[in-house]
Image (tube, rainbow, N blue to C red):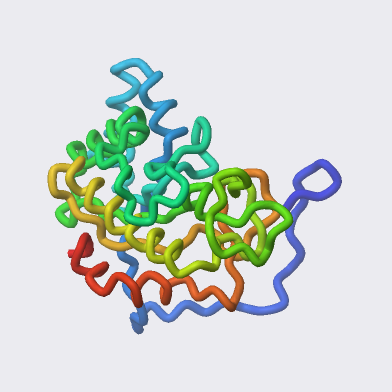
Amino acid sequence: MWSGGACASPPPPPFTVVVDVTTRRQTIMGFGGAFTEASGYVWQNLSAVAQKRVLDEYWGAEGIGYTIGRVAMNSPDFALNDYSYANVSGDFKLAGFQHDLPRDNEYVLPLLRAALKTNTSPQGIRLFSAPWSPPAWMKKPFGNDNATEPNASTPGAMNVCRPDSLLLGADVRTAWALYFSLWHTAMAKQLGGHEFWGFSAQNEPLAHGHMWDCCGYVRTQPLFSFMLARIPSLDTDFIS
């Protein structure tokens, strides 16, 4: 415990925790970390010897045995700057989606491919994804909380978050749902067919007011309903 600039002994607990090792109530699937652009950038700037050591100590036979990995869909807060793969305002069909995932191929995918190759666990590495922010044009601009459609002259911003960030229009939500499907399909292709185990609809959905990539939601915007209702095949597109 930190107290007054020095370490102090914690106070005596007011209760006792009893662990019953004879009864199992849940299974721990594994432990892991996040594959971000920042971590990939740092890893690539290491020497070859240091790169191998990182891989071995996290995923090798004598390492700590990471078997879970989270991959950011679009730029997270740990990125060199903001990026997404559908940057044309009003492109609801996502005709301009960048299926080759150029930014992730710079730093994220090289580290991810190396981790998958190094991994020695029989279960492999379970991957799941989470977006920090949709493309900027899918978000509400400042001063217009009732906006429903994108406006190229006053777009939102990936690194600005408000309590209710996503535009209200059904076509925007359908496009964002389609984005999930296209991104996971493209990512699996980049990984040689390695499918994602799952995804979450939003990283920190109740966080807002930050100046980094985020997207706030409130109770009037259920996270999954807008996706699953409009993309019935979402679960078969990329979830094994």
